[in-house]
Image (cartoon, rainbow, N blue to C red):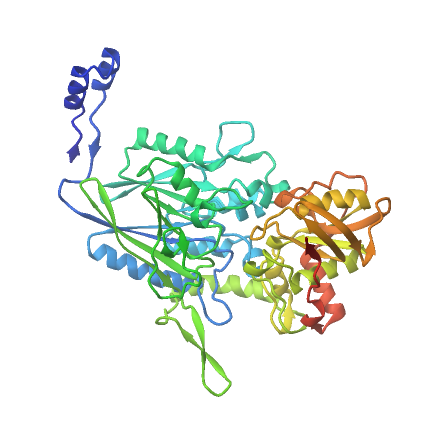
Length: 561
């Protein structure tokens, strides 16, 4: 055992007059801090990580990712690390919930079962965990064999946290503290019904608080934050809450060793200081970000990668020896040279763990039967990629709003880009495909607003920045914008009448103030139709099939002056 000689140091401090006699006396009565590691002996350990799983317990249609293949990778690394005398931690940056219908209808039960089998050690609480009420989250906690961590999530008006703040791990004598943080944007991103009585406090002050607590009580050799906050280049987070870069910069240098992140769903592979690689190619080298002495990692999304960080600990000093993103059966299109293409693995194929596959198979079949019934046909592609729908109008946004307007007889419709979660590709469209686009189970609502009230509403809605989940999609509206002012508003190609009443259709999430939109569910003209968004879109496909994507290409709705 290695001991810090507190008595000798305090004697010197007393001679220099640095402390009061009482404080010295109190300190001498404390026991020396015992470290389990030995001087001049190197210790090896590995941190594996994923994030933003979003229901992908099963491989996709072309055999990419899935927990069974992920288990093969983790098991192989675990054996390798153990054989060399090292140890391993497996962490998740959160958002296990919401994204694939087979998982959604089972409230992510197969996902947590699979994570147990793989051997996850801890996860951050993501905003999409709050797509469910707290009662369901508690059931998921009971199912999971690892802790849900969030130091900044509290019961409103109290000092009582909703989840554990941190967890201690002993890696062959190296004491590692892992604490969790959840984006404080969750109050806007989750349904208000699911966050009643809960508050998400600012992440930096809570990180400072929990780090001080860990240092005082646990004397760790390494501190890791497992976060669901997002990685924004150079800390430029726009209208979103601060992310991992800002967190690292706000702490004392070296106070936090590593951030295992999530939320922004990108591979954090740096081309240079404060600049990510624009289009990361699976299987190529990946340099993690480093800010103020803190390593920051993130493994894109959906279990597409397992991130691997190999550390060496020697005499109190921590060194990152190796980092990589391991692709989980990701594939690329290769031109055959005769106007045809084929799919090839970026790297070698990873076999799926047969035992885990057998465990998960019944859940996949159970969900598939419910969701595979054909709803209609699509000609072309309806675009729902997050890097498009959070920056510009899309044909998929137009189709969704067309369905809502038709169902309610509304004059106009508004939707946020963050509520569009996937694309629809040409061919038969089943209910499961629609649920991948609209997985949250939001209710379609409408409200009657005067033209003047509608302009006030639009001024707030259109203030959402490009790149944020709140970016506004419009239907049956055109206008001119000069700075923060809007003018020349037209509804269905007619100039807006400030006294006339217009019916606006949207979803209950936005109506209750989600994404920072105006709260309209308290107005006397507000109506919750009770229709689930995905069900309305399904009915629209059944009525209008075949759907031609070209018919929904957006016009220029906003003219900038």
